[in-house]
Amino acid sequence: MDKNGYKAYIGIGANLGDARAAVEQAITRLDGLPQTRLTAQSSLFRTAPIDAGGDDYVNAVAEINTGLAAENLLAALQQIELDFGRERPYRNAPRTLDLDLLLYADRQIDTPQLSVPHPRMTERAFVLLPLLQLDPFILIPGKGAAHQFAPQVADQLISKID
Image 1 (cartoon, rainbow, N blue to C red):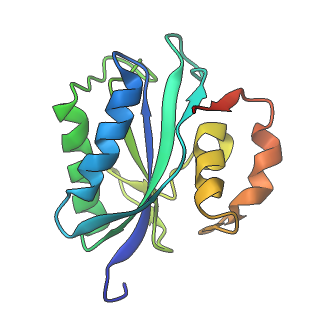
Image 2 (cartoon, rainbow, N blue to C red):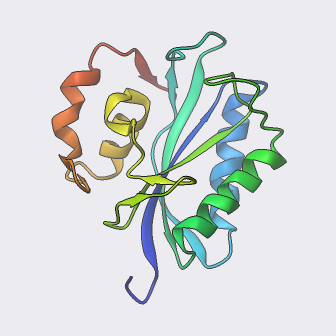
């Protein structure tokens, strides 16, 4: 941790209701978390659901700097999801809002509550492309350069939203 806190990346997605507004409001909420400030945000992207049905998702990645411990940050993200009406009726269910802690500094965390780096981030275009937009040279702890995984997700449909 430097004097400003830990750099963390948050994956954001929604496909129920006004998904674009939910993603934009979530980014604003991240900037309002205690000991946290938004330092960058990707463009918004539209993607088809993976392993699920429902409407297309609106996705983005936010870079934050936070003094919160990873577990406390996760709890704050889950509270924001609840505030947006998030329910978890089944795996990969459509969502009013989904916030995933993708990276937390250069830490590797594996507890029953939290896995960082996010275990499927290298398999998802909706995570990799916005992340690479923020930092084309970003490293994923324990896995290497994020850009090396881009060819593996090239068949997943994703489009930038104007």
